Image (cartoon, rainbow, N blue to C red):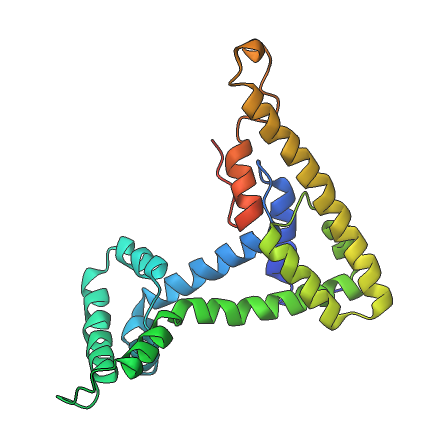
Length: 236
């Protein structure tokens, strides 16, 4: 099938995941791409656009994304965003002026809502939902993509859960059965291999194994972390 623009990054991520050394979860690569794109947008001229400022004032940013923006070096742009966001937070949390009821429940609920919002996270999540829908569509309609899917080394556990969830919601029972079987075989083989690598890593700290080779165990810890929690692999 001819690639449409929304399928291109999915195909590229599935190809790159296989080629990378160490290998990666293709959905982690997609998530990383979405984050880079959103950071590039928000750290550029968009930071000063009124409609975007209304959203960032209201939603703010999580700690991770505030730190990523700060690392970019545009301190004045970030300071201007923080200035208006702090004013919005002050207005929202302390709305009512000098009124004080001694309970703090309203402020607690407002703070909880603020803790759960991040402008960048929400935009990434919206885009990722579309990516997952399109991935299932590709699996259903494109046999070449099915081969890329079958050749994946692994899916991190958080994305494996989402993979099953979206597949179950979008595919027929017959198609989902094959989809699930393929994904499960990939996961089962990888976790068995990874567990063996972690066990060998542990053995290498026993003097009796000093002269034995590391095989694939040297980077077993970061690979296990990536598999269990998501995120790109870190090559040692």
